[in-house]
Image (cartoon, rainbow, N blue to C red; front, side):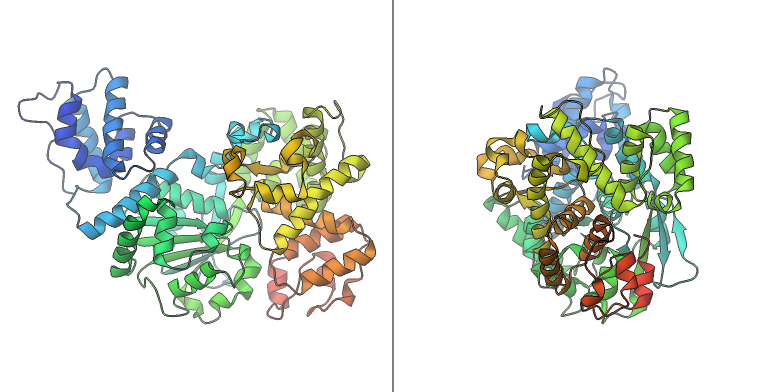
Length: 594
C-alpha cells in the first residue's frame, strides 16, 4: 500500500522533540480525520481519548480541535516524544486508513456527521450503558457495585456468537464467534441484513459493538458513515426523512440545522453509498410510527430512498415473521443472522469473575445448571446468566423456570432497596408474595406503570411520567419501593428535564415481568378485562407478558380457550405466545425456546 510522506519539517532532526506550533502547522489538519487512531498509536489511553472527544462533542471544528488536544496530551505524557516516533505512528495507521486525500465540500458535510458519531460511539459508555453505578443521577437509585457490574461488558461483547443463513429454515447455517467473523461471513454486509434473537440475547449489544468498533476503525474500513438507532427512543420513532435522521445525529440545537440540511442533501446525492444504517428493536415500535415508514422507504417497500445504503434491522423472531415490512421482499434478497447468545466458555469465564475465582462455587453452579436443563439453555441469554449468578451467590439454589427466576431476582432487588434505604435492616424476601402488604402496594404502582407503558409502546419514559404513578419519587424517593429496577440517567435530576425521556427498566424483560405481575395481582374480573384488551392489540412483547402471567398465576389464571386465539391453546397454556392471523405453528415452535 502507498506510504505517506514524512511529516518531519525541514530543518528538524528525527530525534528532536516536537513543539505544538510545528505540530499545528504541519500535522494537525492533515491527520485530524484519524486523530483517535493516531492517539492510540502514540500511547494515549482509551479514557484520555474519550475525555478529549467528550469535551469537544459539539465543537463545529471538532476533529481539528481534538487532534490538537491529543498532541498536547501526548507531549505532556511522553517525555521521550520525537518526530521519529510520530512519523512511525502515522505510517502505522496509514496501513489501515490509507493516505489522507482531499475531500470535496459534499464529502466534508458527511465527514462532520461521521466524526461526531465516531466520537460518541467510541466512548466506553456507548458500548456499556448503565454499567457504571456512579452514572445514575438519582442518588436514591444507585445499584450496589458488584463484580457482576464491572465484569459484564467485555465478556458479553466478546462471548456472543452468531448463525448466518440465506433462509429462516436453512439446514446448514454458518457460524461466527466474533464480530469481525460475522462481518466476513456476511461478505462485508449485503443491502439488507435481518438480525433476530430471543429477548435479552444480545441484539442491542451487537448493534452497539458494530458502532463502537466502526468508530475505532477496527471493522468496515470502507464505510464512511454508520448510524446506530435504538428504535425504543421516542425521538428516533419520530424520524421520517433524511434531514431528521441527520439532525438527530448532530443534536437538536439550531446551530446544527444548516449542517444537517447540507449533509442530508449530500447523502441523497450519493444514494447512501458507503453508508450503514442500523435499526435496533423493530419489535419495539408500532407499524404506524413515522420511523417505520422511513424504514420502508429505505428497503424499497415504497419509493426507495438511498438505494446504495446498507440496512441492518434487529428484532425478536416473531416480529420479523409477522411484520408487513418484509412481505413484499424476495426471500433471497437479504441475509439472516441469528444471535445465539453467550458461548459456554464465555459463560464459565463470567461465573469465574462473578464469584471472584471461587472454583468450588463455580463448580456447584455448573452442576446445578447441568441438572436444570431448561435454565441451563436459557443461560445463553446474558441477562438470565447475570440473574442466575447473582441469585446463586445469595442462596446456593436455582429457580425452577424463567418466571420463578424473575420473581426471586426482583424480590432480591427490592429487599436490597428496603435495607439500603433504612426501611428494615437485614430483611430478605425470597419471593414477591412474601413481601409485606405495604411494600406490595408500593411496588404495584411501578408494575401498573410498566403495564400501561407497554400498552402505549413506552419503553423509555420521562421523570414526569414516572411521577404520575409513583408520586413518592418527587418528595420521598426512599419510600418508592422498586426504583432499583430502573436505569435513570443523570439528566433526570434537572428540574427542566422532567419531560426528558431518560428512564427505562434495567431490562425490557423486567418491564414485561412487572406488567404480568400487575395483571396477576388483579381480581379475576379485572384480569379478564385486561387480557381481552391486550389480545386485540398486536404487540410482540405481549408474548412474554403472557408467559410470565401464566407462571405467576400458578395455574389459577383464566381459561385461555375463552379468548379469540387462532391456534390451539396448548401453546398459550405452556408458553404464553399470543396469536395473530399471520402466525402459524411452525413460527410458534421456532420461538418456544424463550
